[in-house]
Amino acid sequence: MQEELITLPQFNTPLPYIANTDTLVAQELYVDFLYDSINLKKPDSNFVFELKEIVLPEPIDTSQIQVYTRPSVFVPYKSKPVEIQPIVRDEINMDWLTGLFILCLFILTWIKYEGGKRVTQFFKAVIARHNVNQMLRDGDVIHERITPALMFLYIVSLSTLIMLIIRPYNIDIPWADSPFLKFSVLVSAILILWLLKLSFINISEKIFRTKNESFEYMVTNIIYNVATGIIAFPFLIAGHYGDSIVSLYIAVAVFALGLTLKIIRSIFVGLSAQSFPLVYLFLYLCTLEFLPILVIYKLFIS
Image 1 (cartoon, rainbow, N blue to C red):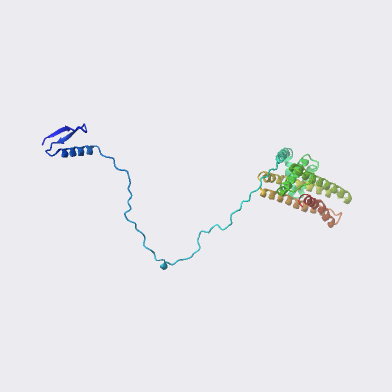
Image 2 (image 1 turned 30 degrees about the horizontal axis):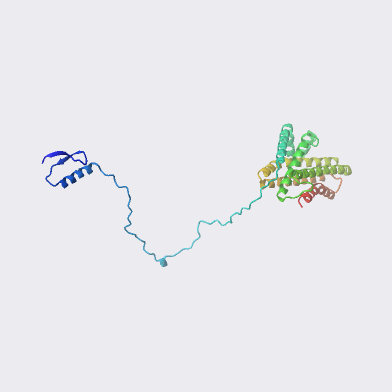
């Protein structure tokens, strides 16, 4: 058998061909085989899923299973969901209070520069009574330049506290239709009560001839008012801008504690004077300390 190169018209490519005496069909099949072996087909990428057999689990006899009831280690959330109540947005404009706070901050800065040591003596006098004598030896507390500024801070703090407490209740104050007028009425009421208190102290000093005791009582009032005003001021800022009820409670606690300590110190000051009986001292303190609070409560709250 002799190997020859032939060219078929349908492929136009010379392929090795072994001559065979078979039919032409056999020759064409041989040529097709050689051509397919050189140009391999790409593998089929189609995936055919055939379900051959379904195996089901054998049925379980539940009558033979013993069930144990035990408490779960995972405790469900038992508390009731919090019901959110929508609150009407406060549309009241109180930008003027921001300017008042800035003014108080400027006053505190000036006091720190002018009499920082004096302010420290105020807080020391709150703790011990003998520190009051040291303050009086260093200068006249009542007529110093920083004393009116500190009392202004106290009046602003107390008025702001009352304003923030009564604001959610929409309490109507006579002659005041706007928040600024309500605040002005509060400041005026506190200032008038303070002036009446000073006048009553001066009158009682003349009647009972208790000049030293009356002066110490007046200084004691100034000391505790200044201390409570300075301490409560930052909590009032947080309560106003942060809408924090906790800050307001702290401010109320500061003023209540200052009032309690002031009354206790006033009792000791009154006991040091032997000019009048103890029952008069009690009536005196009730008139000066408790009566202004009852008047404010009657006017603005009840």
